[in-house]
Image (cartoon, rainbow, N blue to C red; front, side, top):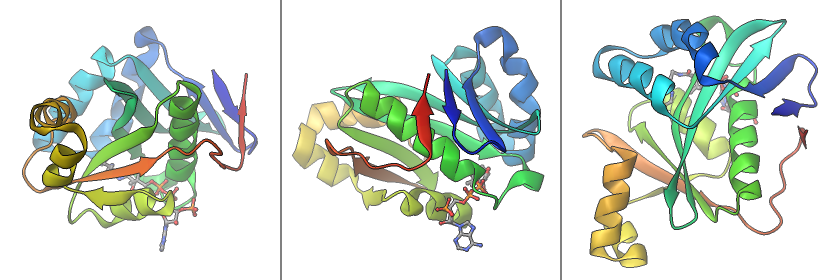
Length: 176
Ligand SMILES: CC(C)(COP(=O)(O)OP(=O)(O)OC[C@H]1O[C@@H](n2cnc3c(N)ncnc32)[C@H](O)[C@@H]1OP(=O)(O)O)[C@@H](O)C(=O)NCCC(=O)NCCS
């Protein structure tokens, strides 16, 4: 379990039995295919973290490892009324620290190209756009194909990534 130093935003891991409580955040954040898929992923994925504000569930992040020391931010969402208050940023910082502690060297995410809030969030944490052909150059054609399959990139989405350098410098993070 990890806890943010900011007393107003508490970040904790959520066990599979308690994840149903987070569904309203997904319903507030996604529609159609994304909503159905995010709900399924919520119950199946290895690690889910939530952000609570005054004991209310405000946001969540779902994380997985892709292999080859690569982490993936599968879904990140903040309930509408809690947006723009730094909660998404705190969840992402917590995710980066988690992956760093697990020895990951890069972290990936995929976002819809026209999703401004999401692009802003990831760019604020130094994520940059990459492409399928850059991935193929880096990891080879077959490996990059496997990676993209694991990320489940759908049309209209772009791939973002950032390196985790040995001196990852994230503020407001403590671990217990
Ligand atoms: C994307 C999302 C998670 C962002 O959550 P949030 O809690 O509103 O994000 P934050 O308030 O932490 O803002 C993140 C960063 O964006 C930037 N930002 C936020 N509001 C901004 C504004 N009005 N103008 C400019 N920059 C802004 C800031 O740089 C901020 O970083 P900071 O923590 O250093 O200040 C939220 O909009 C959401 O749930 N969207 C729907 C679901 C979704 O699309 N998820 C992403 C794909 S899985």
